[in-house]
Amino acid sequence: MSKKTSTKKPTSKPAKAKAAKKAKATTAKPAAPETKPTGTCPKGGDHEWTEEGAERFCAKCKEPEVTKSKRAKKAKATKATTDKKMSALDAAAKLLGETKEPMNTKTMIETIAAKGYWTSPGGKTPHATLYSAILREINTKGQEARFKKTDRGNFAFNG
Image (tube, rainbow, N blue to C red; front, side):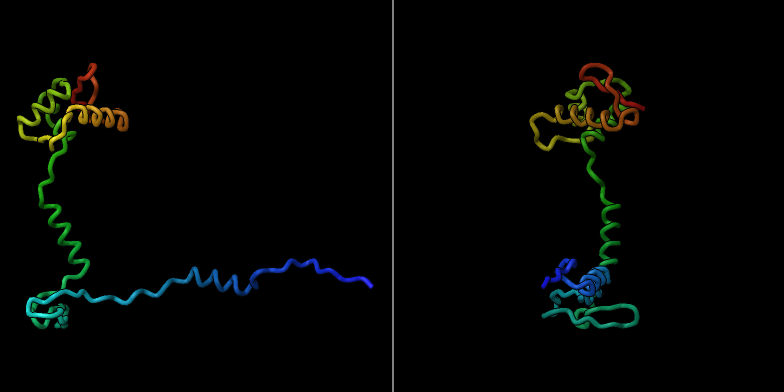
């Protein structure tokens, strides 16, 4: 008597289970329930939000509810109105654009500080930092850089 051997390889999971797992992974997960912002009410305890028309406000203190979209709009508005501090690189470009003559970085730092465009935050070698930043801009932007090297250690405005 001869034994019949099966040519089929045993599978670890049935095909149906694999297909179900793949379908489950591709289906969208249900959205998490929207959580109401909690905070402490000045009148005591947590805010108790009530709706009146399209507005939501606290029944105790009458403070309007601030949603994520309102917070984002408010943050964008404050960022646009605040004056941003000028960097040393931007100040150097402005200075070289005004003077129209090549300068070394030590002279640039002194003149930038004297004109009030930028002040060093206390570093020992701001001229070396500016030098490397200018070279990095020239190397990365090429012909479109704001600076050009005229001589050893000297830069001019490229405009």
